[in-house]
Length: 203
Ligand code: SF4
Image (cartoon, rainbow, N blue to C red; front, side):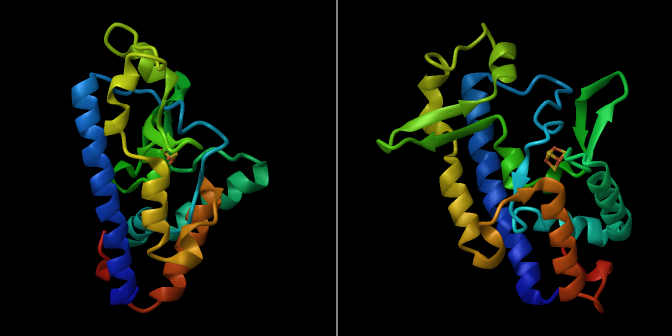
């Protein structure tokens, strides 16, 4: 990966930093947090991401020298028609519970699974909060009233998505099933840094 692409990974991570900061502030103010050990979002078969979103994870997998292993797991899942994220580690006792094996580098969609807002057609902000965290919150929040008090503090998904996408149009807007987005990000890194290999890549 040349300097331009290393810089791109860092630029993506800086967007993630801003999103994380906004979500942390929201969590502190609202008292809402994901229930411990919940992996409901990650075990969904509907998670989609852009290749750009997955670049920090791809770079970390590459840095660790696990690209062939992860690509092999993705291909295996694809053959089985299994769309669940290959980086999710579920707990044996509960297939929907578990954790992300590369949490610090996870894509935008994963950061905003439970904590996001969107602009509706009237350009008003609407909270998009996960039902599980609402139920686990202090006093049992209802999205239609209590959580709405902090809606303006939630990051807007469209704004972060477009901020990211504008950094690299060719891979910043097309959504793929999450494992396919990882696969393409690994291929991108393979073609952009065949010589410099993993020890030179910024995580
Ligand atoms: S990348 Fe991590 S956070 Fe995102 S779906 Fe996969 S396991 Fe979950």
